[in-house]
Image (cartoon, rainbow, N blue to C red; front, side, top):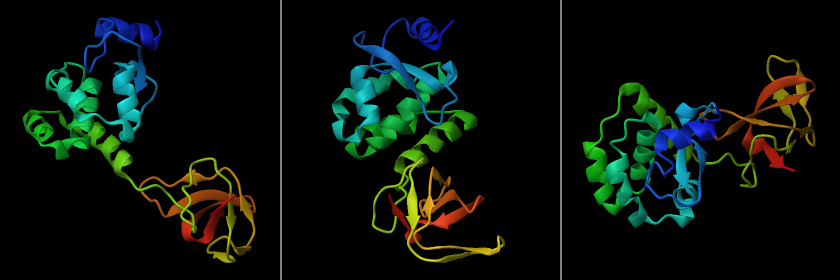
Length: 188
């Protein structure tokens, strides 16, 4: 059975957040492993506002008053995250105060909030870096422990972002995987 079929069955073919039956689809809840337990079935309105903070309509989220009591942990996680995102409205804080999450579910919910609120990784010019980008080293850097110098102008392809740090990336220079400070890099 596919994830979508499982979610349709679980949700009764309606949005698990606002109960709409229009334009429904699967939304993986980060960090996700692509399983039903980390996915929700949502309408296009909820999905758009979850994915794009600029399209947020706090009034739409009054529906969380009901969905925050779901028996499905991932639905509670999304409700918790959205209530936190709009807590400045006032009324969501009352719902957050009433909400109870088991320790492991709360840790999962908070992990996504940290990811959401984390500052993006930027190069020396302030350009946002993403995993898979290519960068150029702007200054000769002595690589401690590897016995070489990463020369200015060296291209580092297919970079990886360092979890929990927006000032470092990982990449291969001279065939060696190293951590580089973003203040010495320029996105190509």
